[in-house]
Image 1 (tube, rainbow, N blue to C red):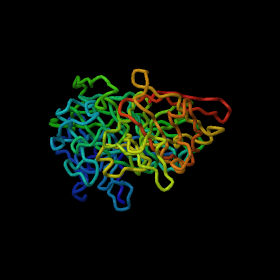
Image 2 (cartoon, rainbow, N blue to C red):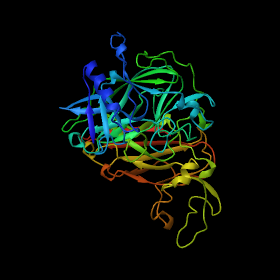
Image 3 (tube, rainbow, N blue to C red):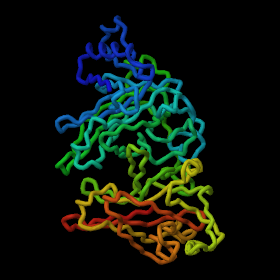
Length: 473
């Protein structure tokens, strides 16, 4: 691994290091645009322009303090022994995404939150398999050892604190160019309180999308609880600049706060195109206990690097297309699923196990429940998960029945599912300890339509204080 650290360097040494690197790096690494000698006397601030390679908003932990910076590498893991990686102050760098990144917003559920279908959209690559722009941005916590965090499972949280930009920005595993569904794992500039959680000693790349040309200035902080601490340590804010489209002289261009004036359509719970969809991938109904607040919501994990997104119920909808239909089989070999519906009838199912590539292509989510994001030491007993009732969107009767856990072990041979509206309300389940992470289960709906599930979680803190939260999902 080659590491060149250049934070807090003088402007002169910064230019010298950047120019000296260019000739020696492989073609896969970022192209640093050096400054001509005649520009040295220009009073305007000039930044190194980075237009390819793996680039990261980087957080470093030094002597108990977090700081934000910029990292560029020729590998997805900037800390790999074979990687050539450079580090810079955020103020010294601007990322450039040119016209090669231009595409259009697809006519797929949810994308209307970014821009109207068919509108211009600029998008980076994500990994070595996508080679349209050669620019692969993400977030790096490789300089935050897990041994210095409160636990090895502690997340480093990147928070978007300020945006000066001509349009909307999104970081996601979802690609408009590839026609992906609009997933709930995004980190974006249009959702209040948007953040991304990533374990220490990790790095992850995402598609970054932009709705307008111009210079985007995105300000972030990073925070986590350190070993022996109960309160989070927060970094000073840092601003990342991205020049999108045909921006003249991006090395000196100012932030563009013009805005595009686009207003997404009003949310219609009957129309998945206007909702924040639960990720086509794995997500969980989950408890959260942060800063003394206990809540229930949806956690969406998006890969082996364990970045995760938390949404409250008001911002989430589980969408099951017709591709999620399953037929109830005839009882056989001691297995009987007719407690869900009569044999031969169809139900809409979010399955217990991964539907695989075919399921993702058909937009089928994989859903479970979790206490993974709370700590056992904060509570004196298991958290209780409850289903209080199910209605239709207007508060009337639901379109059909809801059965959670039909595919769980032992249920088809006479055991009880986790929840079933056929068994009366309310119902409750003591959840798994945090050390067990999460469990997968199936969600069956016996008729098409909109179901509003009133669910809650409750517990007692280690000092005996009761906590609870309820929401409609």
